[in-house]
Length: 394
Ligand SMILES: O=C(O)/C=C/C(=O)CC(=O)CC(=O)O
Ligand SMILES: [Ca+2]
Ligand SMILES: [Mg+2]
Image (cartoon, rainbow, N blue to C red; front, side, top):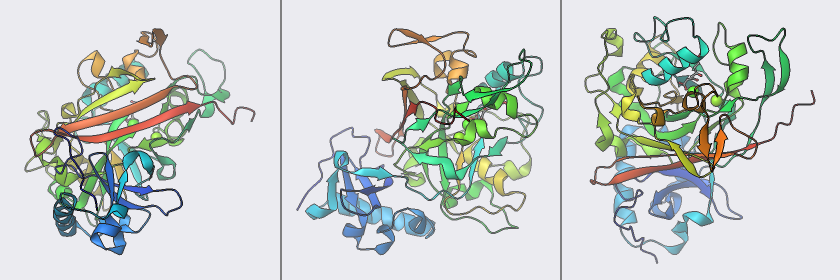
């Protein structure tokens, strides 16, 4: 029998309890919960087959009341004595994509990021488009290329054409970038022809992850007019393996920045879902920027209301991401295109001047938030390494 020692100040104490999908050598992936540096096998300790599955979807679909009940049971169980076979050191397990992703939508909710990208992509127009303060702007991403942290990212190839070039050329992206974001996973959705309100967010969204929405800026800049990003984004989106329950983020709730003009009534929230989450981006082991989520203009609850207001269904496993998190300061920018101002102002990484990603580079984005217990809870990290292009011969 085993008792899990939770060190004071652990980001994975009982006020967090994030869910993931893990396996040990020779066993099938199943649902676990992280406690300190251990992973607890929920199928074993709760004796419920819903946790013996290779994704969280079936549990997520059971709904809010069940999430509350299971969290209460887990809190009791993990502070007691557990069978040895239910407890694994986090270093001994393989972590898998925790959710079968249904649809993936990415928003653009940071005013600082949208203003910076507007200046970089459209230097001759106003940085924010006229719609930006009236609705959370977003685009449909590609669910099939959402991957778990630790998955290597092959440098994408594609078309690009710089403004002065006579014709487009094909080849490996030379402006490969990151986007530091939070992502929200729908637990229980809404049928086609109906919609959810912003105040439904707390009961319909199961949890949150850290997202790296890898972006090939040269492919994107040429392809995106007028329908928005496509192949410049769809080659890979990485998420952290631990899904932090929304129930653990109550202590992180803060007001959103003032919204002026007031949004239309369907985007109103009784108590806004701003979140006091601090992100940190490590590039080859050095922290280069610390984006603050509390500075995001649109809340994730407003994103959910917007996603469904036309009657589009929300489904279990839908992932919607916030868009790049950038704060007002230079060292708070969540994408390298902003941090290096289009590649014109390199940053120093391990003594070298750097702009966009080189083959072999590794990026890890982590996040923490105030927990209910007075300390901080951790999201863990989303990590990925760039491999050389493989389609360049075509
Ligand atoms: O403004 C543009 O043309 C492009 C914007 C982005 O690339 C941002 C995006 O994908 C959404 C986000 O992460 O904020
Ligand atoms: Ca993005
Ligand atoms: Mg992507």
